[in-house]
Image (cartoon, rainbow, N blue to C red; front, side, top):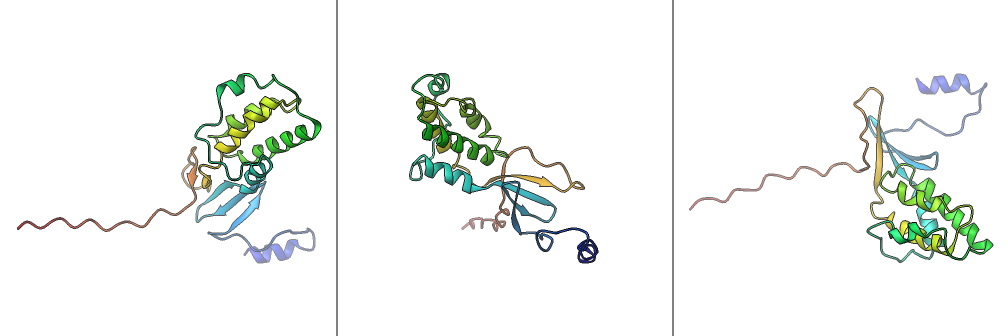
Length: 178
């Protein structure tokens, strides 16, 4: 059993952690939240990174944006006044946090890759383009990637919610004829 194996290795290795994860357990690994399922693992972005960006950019009460940004922002990001040193630090910190957040969010990776191109010398236009990209991310907060165990069928490539399906509804009663 796992306990016997762990007991044998303990004198030779230092173990961090506790018991093996069971279906339904959630833990953090590689800056992402993982939920153990019966034959798979559901990987979701850690919301603390998005919350940090929204708070830093003063967007906590802003509505979610339907699209990640305007094309004019993407075309003019290198134009405009350079940000002051504290603005550069804030910009880089926000973009870095968003990179952690979108590791498994294929639908948002391009929106975050555009501001990454301005990390060396961000401008006011680049900061203005970062805000709609950050506002676009919260929409499907429960989106996740499901990785199946090796002995099962291949994992889906699209994000899927990590919730159990709703219970089946009873069939509707047919109207009686008079």
